[in-house]
Amino acid sequence: MAKGVVLSVVVPVYNEEAVVLESYKRLKKVMDSINEPYEIIFVNDGSRDKTSAIVNEICVMDKNIKFIDFSRNFGHQVAVTAGMDYTEGDAIVVIDADLQDPPEVIPKMLEKWREGYDVVYGKRKERKGETFFKKLTASMFYRFLRKMTDVDIPVDTGDFRLIDRKVCDALKQVNERNRYIRGIISWLGFRQIGVEFTRDKRFAGETKYPLKKMLKFAFDAITSFSYKPLKLASYVGMFMSALSFIYLLVVLYERLFTNRVELQGWASIIAVNLFFNGIVLIILGIIGEYIGRIYDEAKGRPLYVIRQFTNFEDIKKDIRK
Image (cartoon, rainbow, N blue to C red; front, side):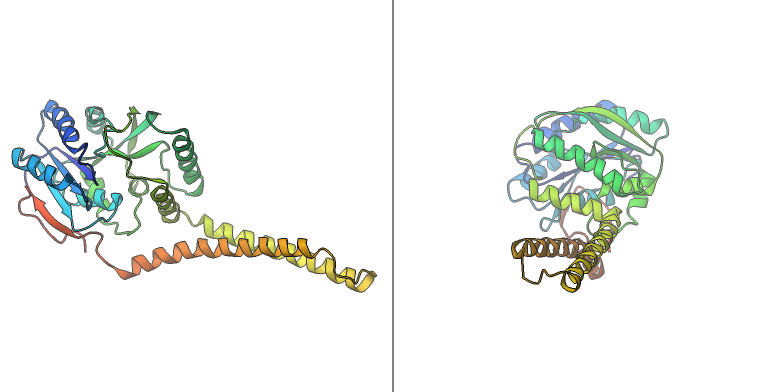
C-alpha cells in the first residue's frame, strides 16, 4: 500500500465517453489545488462505448489516476463499493463523472473532515436541469424512506460525500448484494455533517438512471432498511379479513332473517372480488421482493468481477469474497 495518500476520489463511470475527460480535468484542477497527495480511481461499470479507452489514455499520462475495469455491468452502487475497496487515502470522496455534483465542493468537505467529522455528505439546495417530475419524486422518496426506517438517512443527498478511512474499513465488512450505500453509511453511525451545494445540470450525455432503474434503486433502499412494508401487508391482510367476515355476517343475516333470496348486485360482487384479489397480489409482490433479496444473499456470489487494474501496485485481489 502506498504511503502518504491523503485523499482518494472514487468515480464510477458507465458509458460516459462524452464527459469523462472533462470530469478528469476538473477533478485534477481541484485536487492539485489542495496540495496533498491524492489518487483518483475511475471504476468502469461495463461501459459499451469508448469510456474504457479514454480512461486508459488518461492513466498513461497521469500516474495519480487509477482504473478498475469490470468484466460487465454490475451496477452503480457496486462500482462505488469496488472503488472504496481499493482506495489508499485517509479520506475517500465518492463523486459521479457527469459533473452534476461539482468537484469544487471537495475542499469544503475536506475542511469539515479536518474539523473531526467522519462523514461529510453533499446536500442539494437546488437541482438544475432536472424535470419537475424528477425533483418531486426524489423529494417524496427521501422523506418516505426516512419515515419507513429507524436509520437517520439525511434527505436531499446522494452518494456525493467524503468518508473517513475508518468508515470505509467498516463499510468493507458489509457484504449486502442489493446495496444502498448512503443508507449503509448512515447505519454505520459515526459523526456526520452536510455541506450544501447547487447541483448542476449534466455536462454531456444522458442520465444513467431512467425511471426503471430509479424504481429498482428505491426498492433496494426500502427493503434494505425497513421491514415496515411486510408489517403493512400483514395489517392490510387482517383489515381485509375483518371486512370479509363482517360481509359474511351480513349475507347470513339476509339469508336467514329476510325474504331477499334472489341474487342481486353481481357486478358489485365481481368488483369487490377483483379488489381483494388485487390486494392479495400486491402483498405477495411485497413478500416476493424480500424473498428475492434473501435468494441473492444466499447464493454468495462475489459483488463484482474485475477484468483489469491500471496503475495499481501490490493489489490484494481478494478484498471481497
